[in-house]
Image 1 (tube, rainbow, N blue to C red):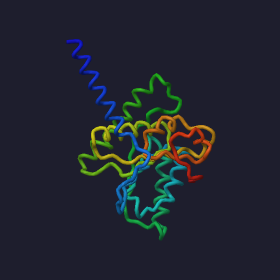
Image 2: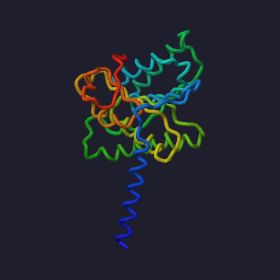
Image 3: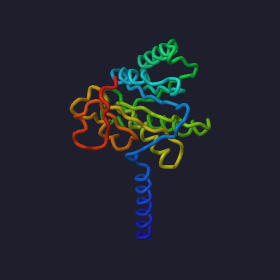
Amino acid sequence: MIRIAICVLALLLAIVFIRFYCILPSSNVHGVNKKNRKLAVFLGSGGHTSEMLALVSSLDFGRYYPRVYIISEGDTLSERKAVLLEAKAARSTSKKTQNPYTFLVIPRARKVHQSLLTTPPTALLSFIKCFYHVTIASSYQDASFADVLILNGPGTCLVLCLAVYLNKFFGLSSPRMVYVESFARVRSLSLSGKLLRYFVDRFIVQWPQLLKDGKRGDCHGWLI
């Protein structure tokens, strides 16, 4: 019986590994040509938010809608900055749109100065909230969470990525993930960048020396 149980467990692990390998992003990914794309943007607070909003402001709001701004609990500053960006875009004749935007608030995976010992419970709570919105709520609404999800750190974006991968694993609707490394990362990648480099659909840096290792990634110069 023990031998049979071990064989079954090994078979299940092999199936999980093969499935996981199959859903890893390929080097040449093309999305479906749609008139508009639902955009989800993670605002990581502070400098991350400023960089992300500068990047988003260059997009065609007439194509990327509706927009969902994902913020961490208590990050009212990022919310106000996003509202100002939307108000500015609404006044612009080139980006005038009546399409709505919303905010999605999720718990922080790890708070500032939080010890590593107490991080797993908060990270789990953050993941559960992300899983609810990416998978469960989207199923009830009969609509995908987003077509494109843009990330640039910090750590909470890891649980977002994990929630998206659960959808991919079970063949559910999931957004393409684009990770844009911070402009401040000149000589080395951030921890989030190192962890997500091979799991997002597009990995973009703003300094060419970050790709000297020849590994996966693109550089299109300064984006902000």
